[in-house]
Length: 386
Ligand code: ATP
Ligand code: MG
View 1 (tube, rainbow, N blue to C red):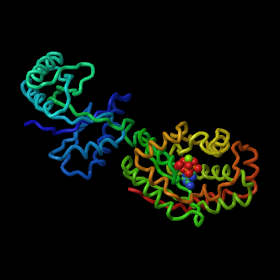
View 2 (cartoon, helix red, strand yellow; view 1 turned 60 degrees about the vertical axis):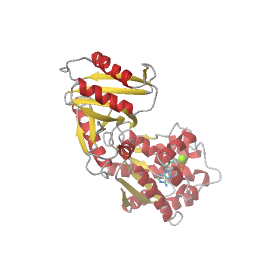
View 3 (cartoon, rainbow, N blue to C red; view 1 turned 180 degrees about the vertical axis):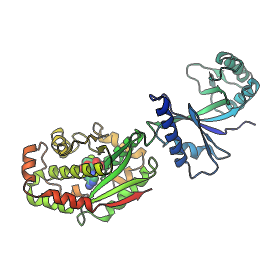
View 4 (cartoon, rainbow, N blue to C red; view 1 turned 90 degrees about the horizontal axis):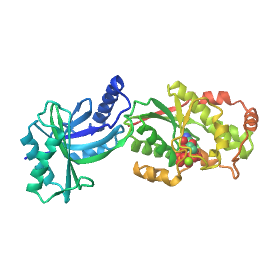
């Protein structure tokens, strides 16, 4: 009896070719190995068009589920491999399709092995009648219940009917590294996930204001990052002591400008740390218009402190859309746990929705913040979440 012995990993149409494509595949294969290291006896085979995971007796379901989290994978198929022999192809096709539910089918053949004596069309015409004769299935070329795919390659013929969606995007690591601003809220973990899906590795920066904020926030961040470990196995978290800076702001600026100034300080710190850690960009979970500090005017005044590009993956998403993602990546329930953040503690009654740059700069002149920034940077606590 024929059984499924491989998973075929497809990366879809790559815009990259040549050496870049090779690097891409190597990185993806590495990430796949890492994602699957809890399973024993698997082997991974890299080829130019696909990566194959040899099941070696393992159950396929948990492996497919794990692979669906790996970015850079377009689709996955459970495949059986037979010799390049038409009789073997016919009998395996029949055996596999008999295990499926449905009333209609279609055969789709791809032949990349040009030495095989039949072309795709001829193979289809030989396989389909075997199925029609031995089952109750009927052909439907437009909308079949079962799509039987046959790929004749140099090393053998792959036959498959079970295909699964991948996460899409690019393999983690092809896109460089971002310094990601992580609060304990809903948006920033989603933004992190969206970046990872584009192949970007993240390091996280968090601003903590003890004793106003509690250690519980850090546990919350750890829990959030553990969820994100499914997409990036090891995440560096920088915890920046922010209390003195925040107190200085509240001692020197009117309440309505506190949030603006606080966020300018956050971006100054993030930019400095990004440069130190060789991250060419900063990222955050900001969403246009969500709160006073995220109006376009506020974003402009806040962003003025750095010339590093800031990527905001949630910028144009509705809260409900962001929540959908948070539920998909399983961070939502953690994010909604009540906690005190440095933003929630000092929230003024009427924050400025349209702050002015010259006023912000004027208030900042009232205290010497550079040494405070240096001190904060020198006292960062680093955690590795894996
Ligand atoms: P989230 O946006 O993650 O739901 P939030 O709504 O509490 O959390 P906002 O006040 O909307 O956060 O802040 C916007 C963004 O600024 C956050 O998404 C995050 O990227 C960054 N940010 C806010 N507070 C902090 C913090 N204490 N440490 C690090 N980054 C922060
Ligand atoms: Mg937010």
